[in-house]
Amino acid sequence: MAESVEKLEDGIVRSAEQVSNQVRAAKDAIASVIFGQDRVIENTLVTILSGGHALLIGVPGLAKTKLVETLGVTLGLDAKRIQFTPDLMPSDILGAEVLDESTAGKRAFRFIAGPVFAQLLMADEINRASPRTQSALLQAMQEQHITVAGARHDLPKPFHVLATQNPLEQEGTYPLPEAQLDRFLMEIDVDYPDRDAERRILFETTGVEETLAKGSMSADALITAQRLVRRLPVGDSVVEAILSLVRSARPGPESGEVGKFIAWGPGPRASQSLMLAVRAHALIDGRLAPSIDDVLDLAEPILKHRMALTFQARAEGRTIPEVIRQLKTRIG
Image (cartoon, rainbow, N blue to C red; front, side, top):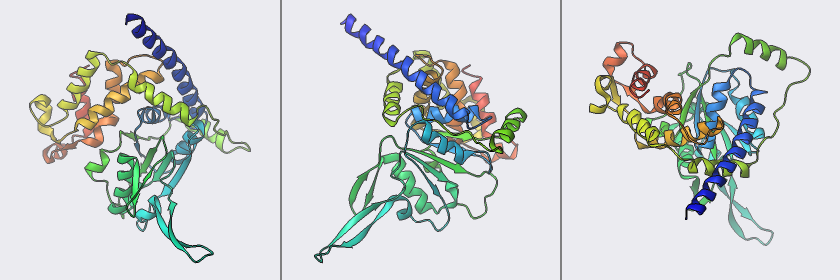
């Protein structure tokens, strides 16, 4: 029995080392095309390794679309893009049934698949579409299949959505409801690059030749990596840190003094997301088990879209990231 357990552990170690090298190579390949966004690249890879979806928040021109295209090539995934607009209908995303007539005069319905049938889908400016269209996509994200005219159609595996949102322009938009925001494993802020990175962007993207993305993984290798993430051990101290952090982000006695600023907080899905994300973060770093530092690093992008502040807290100028930082000090 002890020998079989030892063999299993050796197998996980060897697999983890191999997968970790593949993921780091993919990260370097993406960074050779997308400059000055190392944190964004890492968090996006953590989301995908965890099997989840990400919401990218940033002003136009920060390479969000290019990031998704590059990810598709580097990870060997079939990538598609949908530009969300107010007149977009659910059938424009999911697909629809059309009536075909054969040469013999027989009529039958045929399903034409929509762009959601991709392994990596970019939902560009998701908040511009109507709630009905947003719901169609978010249901597909949660259930990994769609139903059209009573027939079920399974989505390809792996299936990941990277949605983008412009934080500035709110005119003519439909903000995502809280229940739908919860479907995103992580909310990733895409900030301006620093001076050195922007200098590099100037030279690399305005010359005769432009650096192109190179493949580093395949879809099958990614699925193997996602399975491995779920097998990585998590120490009791890390589990307790996750529970303490998520539970303290809700209004109630466990949040202490900070609780008076919180209107509502994250549910168990946040704990699940954090549990997976810390494993994926450790794997990218070449470690076989996550630490409390991983919990602290990933707390903000996983929790901030799952919380809301009270009117009083907002009137006092407090922000959700500030409240999360206060909660983090209690566990680390």
